[in-house]
Image (cartoon, rainbow, N blue to C red; front, side, top):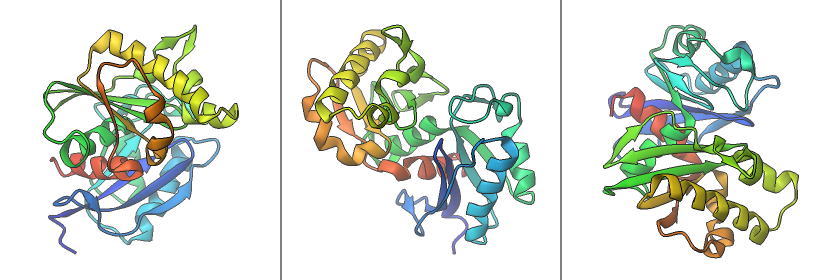
Length: 250
C-alpha cells in the first residue's frame, strides 16, 4: 500500500463510526469502509474505543484524519450536539492519538471534512464564489467556502427557525421520527434554505449526508431558492475522504 497516496479517514457520527484508507489521488476509498455503531452514551473513552476498532480492522499504521460532530478549535472540542457533553474541553487529537497507539491524528468538524472533499473531488470542484455544503442526518451540519477557502466551524444547523434549532425542524432524523412525507420534509428544507440564503447569499448549495442518495425525491420539490442546489457527489464517503485529505495536509 503506497503510504504517500493513502491516508486513513474516520467519520464519527451520531449513529455510526465508519472509516477506511483513502486514495488521495482520486478522492475515493481505497478499501471498503468498516463501520461500528456509535456507543450510547457517546463518551470520549467509548468513542475512542470505537475509532480504534475501525482503524484496527485494517491493521493501519500511519496518519489518521477523524471527523467530529461539533466545533473543533486547535484539536479541542468546543461543542458536542449529538454525542456526550463530556467531550467539551477534551483535546480530541491527543485522546484519540493515544488510543491509537501514538499514530498522528488530525481532528476536524464533520461537515467541514465533507465540504473539503466535495470542493476538491465532488459537486464543488472548480466553483468560485460562496458555496455552502449542508449535511442532513442526525442533525444538520454546514461547511462554508469562499473562493474555495473553508471558513471553519460554522454551525448553520443551529440557526433559529420558527423558534427552534433548525436541525430540530428539518434534519433527516426529524423526517424519520415524525414520519414526514418527502413533500412535507422538502417544504421544511426549503424554508431552512431560504433562511440561510437570506443570511449568506451563496452561489451554490451542496446537499450532503445519507439523504443525498435520494436527492431525486426532494430536491425537485424545493422552489424559490435563487442559489443553485445540487446533491453531494461523494455522498456518505465525503467525511472519510475529507478527514484523510486534511490529515495529509492537502
